[in-house]
Image (cartoon, rainbow, N blue to C red; front, side, top):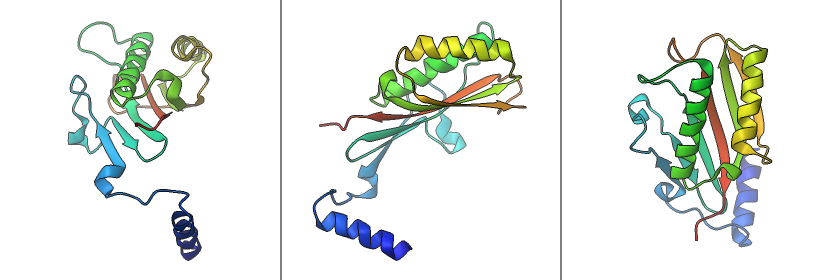
Length: 158
């Protein structure tokens, strides 16, 4: 099967339907906004932009805890969405470019679901990305109540 896939790829490239891949360094760019936590020490970036053609933007899970202010569920959700948008914009994307989100919720119940529905409408408006909600017993650290990640598709840069 791998041989057939490789043959098909070579046929597409020979027909001029897709550009020849550039060096590996040119096929991806990692984004780590300086005002967010340095996650490279944990072995991942905040986002990865893939080229050529349409750019795929893979956004790492964003949380919303803080040392200043409340850390209740709604506050964490609000800050997590703000962080997601900040990483998306730093990656050259817009909220409208988001095609998929995953929501991880600790202590999932009807009240939390209702708040998430309101928040999604507030952030995405009429744009409705695919969404997966996963109730979880725990997240990375004890006080985390919510995490969101996303995939976005942005136009190719000129």
